[in-house]
Image 1 (cartoon, each protein chain N blue to C red):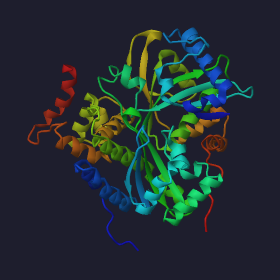
Image 2: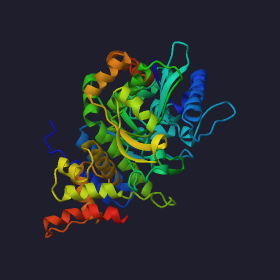
Image 3: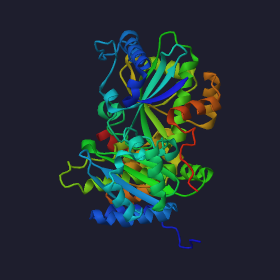
Length: 211
Length: 260
């Protein structure tokens, strides 16, 4: 199932969080060979994990992380604005309606539908929180994965060559795209909505009516 | 029935930009309430040291009572927004405890409505603030309202907070909200009367990419829509167009990128 968890609440999901940071080490250091920091717990963490980002995580029936991504609003510190402005022709992207999406990660051997499910989760954030665009940083290997799940970003600019090529891209989320990603994820829009509401406490009528 | 004409949001934001005293934010909050046609609109600032500042349309007696009782401790809105950056509908919050139920009942006796929507805001040095609209209506009407106005509310909330931060006595110099070269290009062509698809074509970008540049420029300029953003960029001299220029002048905004 999809979970939406702020960094400040990860301690309530210790096992899930532990497996997420371990899987990130496995993907970004071991498989992609990125120059990332892995701590003594085997966790790949960077400075943006300390800014209380919102994680969208696929939790498997085993209670472990199978895939995830990380969101921060572009009104605060972001990877794009601090490290990749050259790609953007020397400027920053700043708006409360544009969030940055980074560290798209899949556990090794994760079912292919999980990538699509994560995109579906991103779409829920847009629909419910007024987000108009996601901007993200990704490398050449991710391009194929995004295409496979039917959610290719639009590339704003790139630097580097071959597999080292890093791009800044954009996602938007139309109703059509939602249905398509929902089919590939094998998660109905209704179920996705339920998971979203469960994470953000929208289901219960907890405001008592005062006559 | 309210038969007064609805104020224009761009005019209210122009006024917000112009004011030079913190006390003047009160009038802006009242204008915004008129615009959104809600019972209440409130801005509530909490410093890292726990000091509170606010303005808005709640009954003053309620604001005073809130501070005297130190209700910040139990207010689910504060608790539920503090470590969040998404807009929060009050229905998402936990009002189940006895203390919070009593708190809500009391708030309503001071004229607060049953519905609320709060936008968490963050500034430098642990600054935290909330921008809230509050109203009395049923859930469906409220869902329709927040759906329709969500993005306007988010933008207004941030502009309001930026203004409040300007009034901080020892604040750090404002982070430069400089337009990027591509944002300047996009706004310049729009100012010349180009349609969106023409702008996108001219800049060899897609309309989606163009929308992101316009979105980002709009926020940096404190504007509510594209026309407003173009007007602001022109009035601040961030883009320059010569009305007598021949049509060839269109290439101007493009050539400067090569010179960067």
